[in-house]
Length: 538
Ligand code: PEP
Ligand code: MG
Image 1: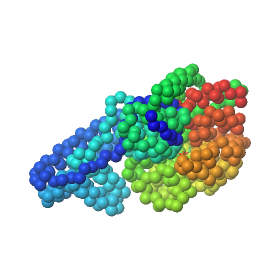
Image 2: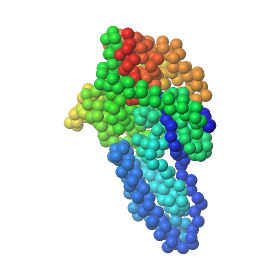
Image 3: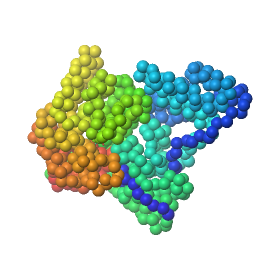
Image 4: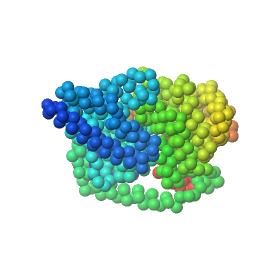
């Protein structure tokens, strides 16, 4: 038995066979010396690539919706692109091996696209590279990522959003990654799927590939390879207890979350993509307290269009119906980077151009389409909008002015909109200290305790080595939280918590006592929190 640990992102125990996710490695391509043979090999590889992409397209469409599947569709079209096919044929005629020609022509086309002025064409560069490498991979015998039948735990260095969309969500028992953070895409997906997972783990992928059984304890953060009988018995017992605990919570399904003294707390879900709203409903969420819009911008190679954003927000609004949905505008920067935005490399990205700062800096390109999409979708449900990383009152005022302008613009265009309450994420110490001032301008507050902890304590939330210094129970943080709730209550607006701390059972009662009336968390944590609220004397 080997064992180690990582940062747990969801409690529970998973035991099963492990799949190690490794990006495919290619063998050196050697030409047969016969151009006709190489051309035939290339043509056959294109057919195989089309079949693979068509399976991937169907799967992505069924599991993630048309929008995400469109990434695959674009790549399928490229395999019929005459410029590409002719360039490859010429190179093969000049003596190149099929795999070399496939990869090299793809790369030179990608570079041409990257240099174009048109943003859309520029963004196709990554697709060309991806699809030509797929063909080259087939030709040079790279191992395609193979999944076993049945359920499995997935071990990986890290997983990009474009990689997670290819995974069969219903068969994954746990993720164990070497990289990632508690707010990485893998972690958020793990919470949405209710699977015990570890990020920043010390797992050795070569060892993992050799082991028969991997076990993950999402309560302690430990992993075990081929656990001995005693460990296995301990884990199986824990697993059974966790299942019984989950079952016992079912009595709270469909109930309101009201304390014994009559305070009602709205228990909402945090989501990343529109499909997660279904998990929120399954978890009995009373609304969406945080939709992290940036996930609509990740795993792709160009900015989503206003229409794409509109469809995504509309889908969430429709799934949630009357229940409130809080959409956070784009919070890219710091730990969440996208190449196509060409953001400068910063010395201190957590203190850099991120969150609302990017939106207020690149209004026409980024903020406007997003706000138009939110207002257009407002007609389909109960939408609220909130801005991340606010530090000054003027930032909120500027964003609010733009919202007003956009609503008027849409009305003038004859597009129906509803009033969208505008709130602020309180996640900088400045916003917390100034909560009483911000409360005059905001319709609600939602505290991002992940960042508020990082900035208040000056401790990087991404740095696993700082572990015990990242103390979300720190008295300074508790004092800020109390001040935020008090300021909101005095101004007659609601305040909630959508950071990780919102789901911390040790603090639920404290938050109720402070005056928070909404807590937002992973869907799988809702029933457990409702039990605590209902049993509370507060
Ligand atoms: C937070 O900072 O607590 C938060 C909810 O936002 P994110 O984790 O996405 O930065
Ligand atoms: Mg944050």
